[in-house]
Image (tube, rainbow, N blue to C red):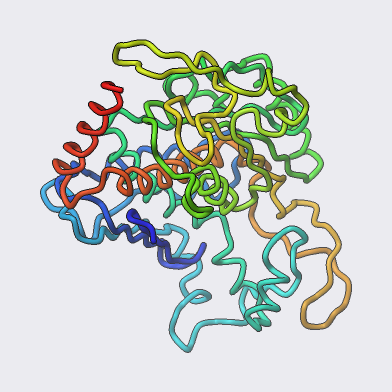
Length: 388
């Protein structure tokens, strides 16, 4: 069972999104701005669609925080959907909702529409779309803001960088990056400006053809100590937990850590990180990070490096062929509002998911009811590692 546990609720065009987090130690400094920063970042990026012009996401704490400090009780957060006013009669929870308005019966290839409709016995596939939508990630990012705030207390930072859009790959030395500040204001959050220019051309070309484009984001966590996760059981291995968290993000189809699939092409002498020791604060250390900070399901003290592959979004301006769910007649799939590219936003969501996994593993290892207790446990462990 997770120590830092969470869930989200809400539909894309419902009143709003709710996130509930438990396990946050009492005394953690926490304000809305700690969450709102990443909520704003999630809405940016070249290739975003009309929904981002409507929403101006901000979180409201409903419980669990008083006078800027976590109470140790469940934290509930609310992110309002500004578009609700245009959908209130359609998405109303009341029995008189206008169910015949904006009905979806033409499932989109690549989306949850068809399998979700069959599984839950819906004839209006909007009941699937509304929850499966990536709009849900706003609530995840709110949870991630809480997780990041906890990790920041101990010097752990999490950031992401776009390394590929469509076939265009950037030349990025991830080991040389320390945070988001250097490239967060750029259109695609990519440090390689030559590649970024070609990436925007790739997105423009997709837009002109009514198409969408995917890409790859690298998510990094720095300052992670040795010993988070465990080798003793499959469900405690931290690399497995990171991979599962990343794969749960809408439209993510692949995850690799460190060298990932590239390690399969190398001899062992070039795939692993040699171990060194100095009798100082470093203790055991590595000069390379091919493992991406994880060995045997346990952090090894190097930065965690995870690469996530996002498929092109399944809602197209020029829809693919499909079959009406009710009549079984062939149609082009129903068109909904969409982005042509949401890869930079996926990076922000990936940061949140990595931070959530690390916060859970952190409290699993150093947990306590208050922030002071967690700090004592962490500092005692760090002293043990230094004295080895």
